Image (cartoon, rainbow, N blue to C red; front, side):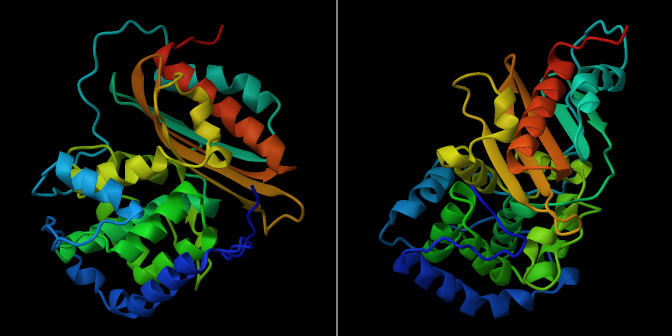
Length: 335
């Protein structure tokens, strides 16, 4: 479980996946020509029938389960459902601050945390506007961008794109991410999609350095909302497809916010980690996901930088995720 600042995998990929990367990169020039001004959204039309490869199973299942024909603007994606009546001795922010106190007391580096309780209509965050390098959590944004662009073309992902998306999300494969980064039009393509998805402060990484994209907890919650809300610009098929990949990450990728999930609840997660290029020897450790805690459905994002080691950073991110989840499902106030 090791990433570098440069988005180039040290992992040797099978020849078939390498061929898919080359195929998609060749097609990437066409995607780069998509103008942000005409970045309209349309629903998916079914692709012609063809032989189904293993990486296509999830997409076929997502389309088969749901026929959400008309995507909608993300005007209310972060608008929570009406809150059930609940007596609180303090505000959600005070409850989060109290829950995070033990974590912050032993904090190393910088930390930001955000959580939306979809069950009770509570949104709360700690350092919501602080910028962090994304590392590999941007791969969730890259896939959402690809799906959004394909909707404009009334198409679903090709077999090559599905194979790359599976490797990028489930294995956190960097070669696959670089191929799809080129396919979406790199930084301009990501920026155009993020304006539609509601990520207003995320700054795409320069050139091919997608791992150096800068983001905030608020924007990561917006991305998770786009993957879960019926008001999302993404169709139901797109949302279910990406979340299914995030629920199927390899064991070595299944850490971070999933530490706060109820056992057996099938959380969806994307993590990111890399040596912090701004501070020699330190680490960026991030985790975002959709999960259930105490039976309530939560969107959770934890971003951190300046961590002394990868292991210390992961431990702190997981402690922060547990505290944030508990603060909204079982709020306890200071005092």
